[in-house]
Image (cartoon, rainbow, N blue to C red):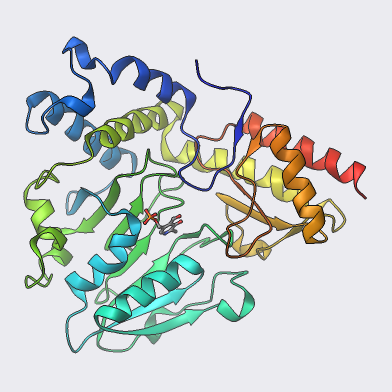
Length: 364
Ligand code: PLP
């Protein structure tokens, strides 16, 4: 029923657990024998409410989100958050501090700069974003509205190993689109964490926003209703019609993560998969060259190059013929990228490693 001879290394939307897809086939189209598919029922019905709160509660429990944080299910992708955060919190007289660690953080910074004043706290742009910059949050300007950072840089394949200690007076907002639910989050260090669901949490169409209630109280109220975090918090993310099907599948993914042993199990799983690939790169005598410096390597997106573009093309061509999907690097930087999100099985990474080794043998 579901293709099994495909190894999905797409960067997003990306692999979903096969068992989730099978369960969705069974339960989504005639939900609890109601005769209705999840997509057909009213979002105001008790039947849908059960789905909605189940997904919210499971996410809260998996990430150990404290009660003083609100979890919102929004639309518009992580990209809308690039605009919503400054609209809510970047008020006149204040400046937002950005750590530039890749293309997505640049986009977030540019969007905020259209709305208010911003400054760059740290950047590794001139090093082709090969590493996470060193940052001292103490060096923020006094009128800083918030600090923005990106936990995992999907395009360049870097990830923060840990975060600087936060100044209690300056909120920290983090884009965790490409590593949410792959490691725990220290909620003492974060005030707003957001993520498009389509990598580690479910299908596209839903954006997770986890926000400290006391921060939300300081939000600008002179913005369109739909763009205000308070609007969505007050109505449990049911202010308008939510993406019901995506929220249902997100709930199935949360159940799957629980069954695997939770977020810590996901962290260990990613570490094993990442180590296998990085080891293959490191032991290839320069046949494969990793993009990220070792201390900043991502356990979600493994980026690498081959000797020249022609060999890369050949690699991608042969990989595709063997069923490896999505290994091409982002169109902005080229090269190769294996995205090994939570749902990518270890066996698929082992098959990729075998392919990489064989390819090297035949193309030295
Ligand atoms: N932030 C990061 C880190 C991403 O990887 C992506 C997409 O790949 C985005 C933001 C944009 O997300 P969306 O397409 O949901 O707007």
